[in-house]
Image (tube, one colour):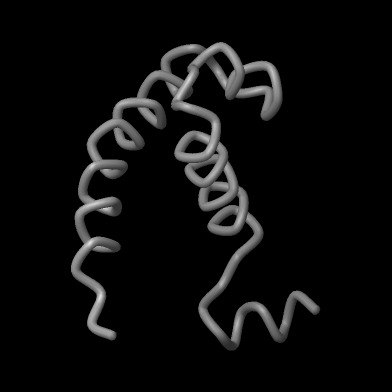
Length: 68
């Protein structure tokens, strides 16, 4: 499995980061929640929350303009 992941350019660390960001977007970007669920520091959780706060309106705007 690790060899297959390396060939595709995907790593466990990248998957974990993506999962944390997804949780931040889905859960309202609460740093305390992220810190408790993923065992990350408060400063790291705050950074993920800040990114989610910026990304959320951009993603919502993108969904409003999806061609049909």
